[in-house]
Every structure is written in C-alpha cells, then in structure tokens.
Length: 474
Length: 111
Image 1 (tube, rainbow over the protein chains, first blue to last red):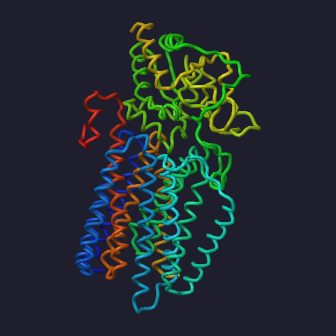
Image 2 (cartoon, rainbow over the protein chains, first blue to last red; image 1 turned 30 degrees about the vertical axis):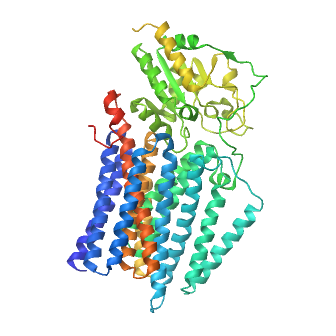
Image 3 (cartoon, rainbow over the protein chains, first blue to last red; image 1 turned 120 degrees about the vertical axis):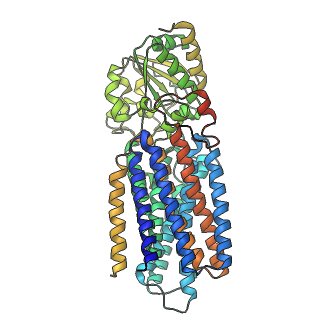
C-alpha cells in the first residue's frame, strides 16, 4: 500500500468514525446539532478524499469530469432548495424522496459497474461481486420506486387509501420468480446486461406493488422500512466497489431504519408482515363519520374548558395528527403559554406514532416553539397522568382508547397513553367519528371526559380567548 | 470464500451491531431528525457515484454516472441541510419571536 493509499484509507476511517460519533450525539437534543455537523464533516472528508483518489488515479476522462461536476451540482442545488423550503408537515415526503434517490443511486452504481466489466474482454466478476450487484440492484430499485409511491401518497398526489388490485399476489410471485431466475443465471458467470436490466425492472415494479396497497396511517412503518432498505443497498454498493466506508455507512443506516421499523410497528400493534401484506389499514383517521347515537357523552363549551384548564395545576396535552392536519400547533403553543403564565404546569404526551413518520409530532411542536423539555415520550409521561388535573386531547383518538387494554378488538395490546388516569379529560374533536381502527373510544363516554366539538385550530383559539377573558394571571 | 469478502462481511456485521447499539439510545423525541441524519449518511453513495464516473468511458456509463451523481448529491446535501434545520428548532426554552421566524428559513445560524 502506497503512502497515498494509506492516507486515503485513514481519511475514510475517520469519516466512518465521524458518522458513528455523530449518531451517538443524537442521544440528546442538546448535542444533536453538534452530532449532525460532525457527521457532515465526516461526509465532506470522505468526498474530498474520493476526489483526491480520482485525481491521483488519473483514469477519469474530461467527459467524466463534466458528467460528475454537472450531476453533483444539479443534485446539490435541488436538494438544498427542497431542504430549505419544505414544510415540517411535509417532512415524511422529503425523507421518502431522499430514500428514493439514495436507493436509486446505489442501484445505478452497481448497474454501471456491471456494464463496464461486461464491456471489457476480461473474464467476469467473481461470484461474490455478482451477488452484491444483484442484491444492490434489487434492494435499490425496490427502494426507488417504493419510496416514490410512498412520497406521492404522503404528498396527496396518489390516494392515501390502500390500492388493492386483483391478482396482486400472483404478480408479486411472478416478479419474485423473475428476479430469482435472473439472479441465478447471472451467478453462473453470465455477463448479460439485459438480464440485469430485467431484474432491475422487476424489482422496481415490485416496489410499486408493495407500497400501493399500504394505507396512509401505516406510513411511519413503511418509511422506516424503506430507510433500512436504502442503507442496505448502499452497503451492497460498498461490497461491489470494495469500499469499507460505504459498507459502514450503509450498515449504520440499515440498523437505524430497522430499529425504527420495529418501534413503529410495535407502537401500532401491527406486525411488519401484516402491514406489507395488507391488513385492516384503511385511509386516515380524520375522515368524516356519523355521530355515534348510542354513546352518551358530555359536551362542554370553550368557557368550561378554559376554566378547567386555567385553574388546574398540571395539564398534559395529548396531540395527535389531527392537530398537525389542522395546522394548529401554533394555537396549541399559545394556549400552553397562557396557562403557564397562570402557573399551570404544561407538558405534552407524544405517542410514538403521532404523525406520519417516527417522531414527527415532536418536530411539528418544536417548530411551533414548544421547548423540548416539555415533549415527553409515552413511557415517561404515562405515570404522570394520575397526577394531572386535566388531560387535553387534541386530534388524537386510537392512542388514547382504553379498549386497547381489553382483549378482542383491533387495538388490543397496542401501547396507549393512559389519558383515562387523569382527574379530568377534555377532548377537542370535530365529531364523534371513529379513529383509524374503526372503533368507538371508551374514553369519550367516561363521565370525567368533556367533549368540545370543534376543529382543532378554531377550538384551541376559542379556548385561548376564553382563558384570557375568564382566568386572571397569577 | 475470499479474504475481501470475509473482511467486508466482518465490517458490515460489526457496523450493524454498532448502529443498533448507538441508535437504540436516541430518544423518541429525536426520531425524525435521526432518520433524516441517517438519510444524509447514506448520501455516502456519492463516493460510489464518483468512482463509477471516474471509470466510465462509454456513453451509457456517462449517462448512468450522471444520474447517480445527481441523485446522490441531492441526497447528501438535502439530507444534512434539512436535519440541521430541524435540529435548530429544538430549544430548551422558547426562543424570541425574531430568531424563530427567519433563522431556519434562510439557513443562518442562531446561537
């Protein structure tokens, strides 16, 4: 190994170290930004070293430089623009899009490498490389098309309802067989580029047929899973190019996506297979529904709610996606600040699946200037409900339903926020519509629960006005 | 089984384990920035795109390398920028109105 190679390899090692330490710093909001910058510095080092390597090797043609320069510039500008302008509610779409392009780039790396080697007179790649090429291409293509579909669903370009089409399983089986057959053929040492392209197309179609039947509310699981896929595809690209830094980075992302997939599936009480194969997932919880005629509920006014909240000593807010869908985060924070000015202790109970991707609700509230120490995870906040005077539920439904503790219904066993343990409960809700699971919420019929029927944004504004009018500061 | 495969596999498996260990300590509050940060890290595929662009000497190779470079650059630059923007919003105390309204919009730093 020449001195130059040694330096380059050490630089890659430093970059990989920066990625690990950067992720480690994400264990607290106080250090997370430093972590992200460390990771970015590692990335800059890796890219700079590759640039030095490319120049040093001297293989690259003038056209190669032009292609690389313009491609990178266009991509960088587009990425930066999207990152700066994206709404926080649209974050899942953007993450999905970055998954798509990451997976696509990884697949292209393998395809290009395969085509280059096939074009030479030399014997083909060893089987270990061909296996990595096929895995990279399959996972990368599934991620590319699947993430684009997920992104389209989240953006509302495609229906968020599950799209079920006849013979889907037969089609998937056919696609699987095509991929397996093509892969087997390439493993025998064939350098047929068309076979690899056929595998690519089959995998891309599979990505579409995999994500289309999945409903909008299952998106946190799907995005996490596709994130894990992208990481794995990148690691496979590392096997193809024999580049440890790609393998390490890809494996880290694979681990992260895997953990989040598991956490999300657990929090929704669904198995990953069930979601992928398609279970009861139907559309969003914000849909219209008829008022439950049989349920006896107590309706309250904004003034009632204001007095109850204003004279409480401890209030726990339970925000659901309905809050974000109504863009009511700012009204929520304003009300919370008014209450705090009146000596009320306010915190937020965040269920893991509140939002459209893992942790989404926290970002939405942080954007609305809610200080992060008030954002509490489910396991931390649950014991506190018993000490809360009021639990204020805004736009959340299934995650507060005590029915989850009973067997025999769709949400049995799902981890929930123990809202019913609070001394009193106020629910802001547009109607008595059912949640995503299509289940009546026992919480609403509880005598200590007051229902304030209103849109989240207008309802919170009305309570805020009433607090100002009815409850003096101090 | 060759030496390269063995060492690459070793690196892969150990990195997965390190990833599981490090990431399981990230609080749920930060899961969105975490995923976004992980997203930026897989932008490392830009290194792969650079290497294939360097060895490309055919029209097909150039076209594919071009797309790969654009995709990867979008991934890596957008990923880090949006993670930074999100993390800026996480504050221990409510910020003053001025620093939240523009700070993250134009990407300037607010201490």
